[in-house]
Image 1 (cartoon, rainbow, N blue to C red):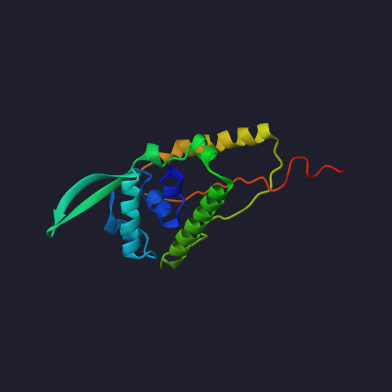
Image 2 (cartoon, rainbow, N blue to C red):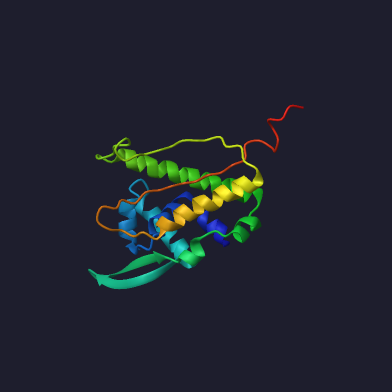
Length: 182
């Protein structure tokens, strides 16, 4: 199975997001993080990711006669490169976008279902901005955003830190020069 096919699945994407920051989790712990997904589905999708080489076993230990595995994401394999994206068809991109949006909706629903959910206090934000950019301005902005994200992406769990999801989506909604009079 191609890497994009492994990643383009709402549940597998959520599993990878939960582990991308270097955490090592058991399947039971993943089930706790994904309470809206059946345990059977989590176990099945962890197996698919492990067989596909995106997750690896970090540790095994016996617990009440059964072997409990602690998994970690293989970060170098999980990231989609420009080359990976170039190999995807338009339909693959459509499926990928749908998987991301579906995973995001599920995570937001889980958040809102928590007793302590407070979107204002938690600075929850969901906004869209319309930006007019030349290709050069777009590329400059993308690099600036990447630089900011790189400065934080390796932060691990620590006292006072809460894991957040940030989902940047950039789509050209009109063709070039759409605002110019004809």
